[in-house]
Image (cartoon, rainbow, N blue to C red; front, top):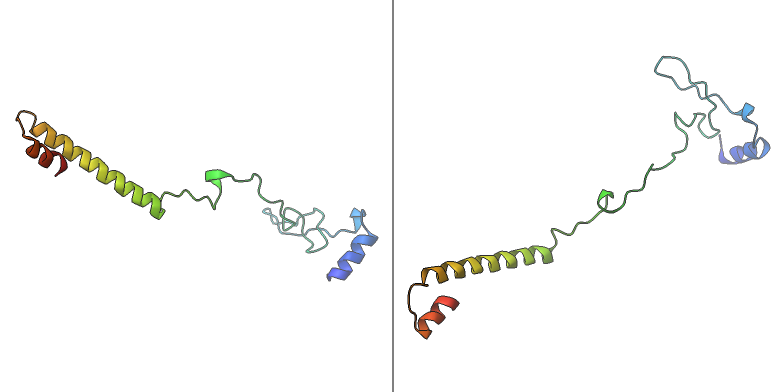
Length: 115
């Protein structure tokens, strides 16, 4: 049905459900669907009517376009820096544990603490 014919038909028969075509889609039992179809494609809402849209809107982490930001260059650089600091702290702890029993001069202390 052409768009102009559809608009004319809707205007003339706006609330007349008797003029709507029967859906006629094949059911699982093998028969034909007996619901009233729409004017555009002749099928009922179960077999090709207009979409009702999503049942619930997705927000936050559930949304398909959610960006978590865990793999940005800035975050990766911060993680590398944190790992370097952690390693340096462990090295410092190991060095200080190994040298606790010794009496160090100021120069030796500087070498041990600052590499």
